[in-house]
Image (cartoon, rainbow, N blue to C red):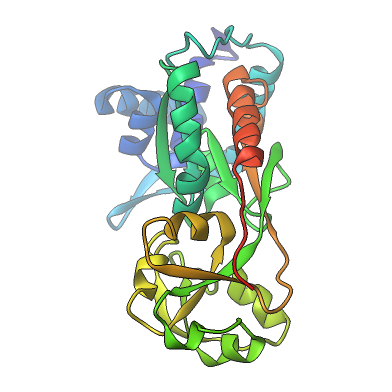
Amino acid sequence: MRFERLDLNLLIALDAFLQERGVSLAADRLNMSQSAASGALARLREYFRDDLLVLTGRTMTLTPRAEELIEPVRLVLEQIRATIVVAEPFDAATSDRTLSIMATDYVFDTLMRPAIVACAVEAPGIRFELVPIVEQPVDALQRGHADLLIGIDNVISTDHPHSVLFTEDFVIAGWRDNPFLAGPMTLDLYQTLGHVSVRFGRQTASYEATAAGTRAIERRVEVIAADFTSVGGLLVGTNRIATMHRRLALRMAEFLPLSLFEMPFTLPPIREIAQWSSRRKNDPAIAWLVQRLKQIGEGVPAGTGRD
């Protein structure tokens, strides 16, 4: 179908070029060969009388005209999907969809692990792809790099639909034979001992570090880990402690010699929130997955730590 000489099928290709800013990545997203993607780009260049994508050094960049098209093209496609495209019937028991979830390893271990086990029975044909969280997760979600993003409040955008899955608080974890942990956890001990913390990419501080800092509570961070699930192992054999998500700490304590303690000061809990692109707001598979994750998240026992 054409509208004023523009093949409307090319709008989807144009969106991919604008979002991916490259021919190869756009071709992968469109499930077409690179030569076919190059042909689509050539036709778009002819129509807009603009190069759209240009080689700058070793990378492709958008022309000013292409930059102007990003938001209008996205809005047009979202409007089409929301008002014209009829969603296919979805039955979890018979579906063979692939659903991709972007989150931290903490979410994969404490939520997605039991979810995948449950879905193996009730939705045996559905495949799950677990995507590591990136520094601009909402942008990646909008580009179609994942169907669902799971993160805390400061990760989620108000521009896309979302739903709270569960809330989580924190405990202190330390090696079971740490001589400093024979008694209760106090604020003075918390500030005296060395800490293991987590940082993702160029992120400057973890949530617990920021929250503690706002309360003028000092920590001496001696080890910075690249993910949450490695923290427990980094405590064993040392006198260090770590502020850990309660569910993850309980799971780590099942197979590592760790002792857990309640926080010696008030640390606000976090909310783990599922977010999906507004262009997928009518996707019944996404709605099913979010509801199922919510049920599983609320049903996972949190347990307690030591005083």
